[in-house]
Image (cartoon, rainbow, N blue to C red; front, side, top):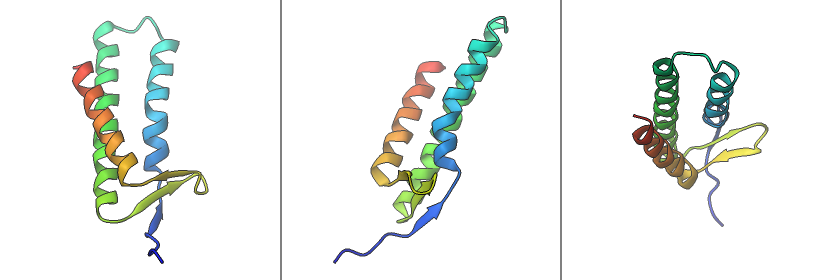
Length: 95
């Protein structure tokens, strides 16, 4: 029988999920912002997603499964790695 991995309830997975949505809503709701300010919001959001993805990947490498929303959102090693890679690509494309 396989051993059960330790789980930890965390707010980081929903933050990674909702952060780009909130940044996009902010940029859409306030279209008259200075273009440089819009770019900085995009770069900051991508950097935060990349950093939080790296943190989740580190937690997954230590054997911890992050959960949220009563276990509906579950971050294992593969999903954390994908978030980190997609966040890094997003950061590279926004800079």
